[in-house]
Image 1 (cartoon, rainbow, N blue to C red):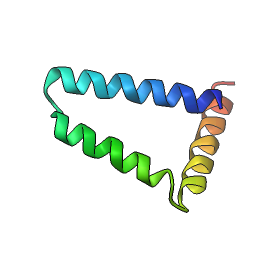
Image 2: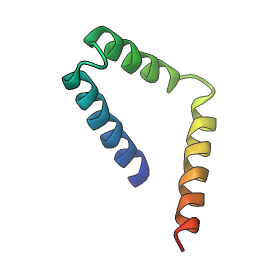
Image 3: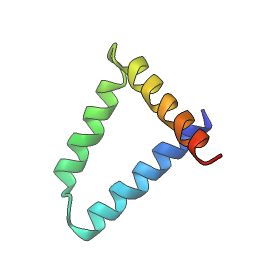
Length: 64
């Protein structure tokens, strides 16, 4: 759960910066957010979560 919150905060900050610098317009940002929201309610969401958790675990083992 801690990883999920951290990733959400990180992606939120990245989206904010992209909006402020003009690389992403509001319409594109809303589309991306809605895509993520609806993707989270599909059957692939557990697989995406598992891949992200495995990647985070692998990255923590590399640093040791």
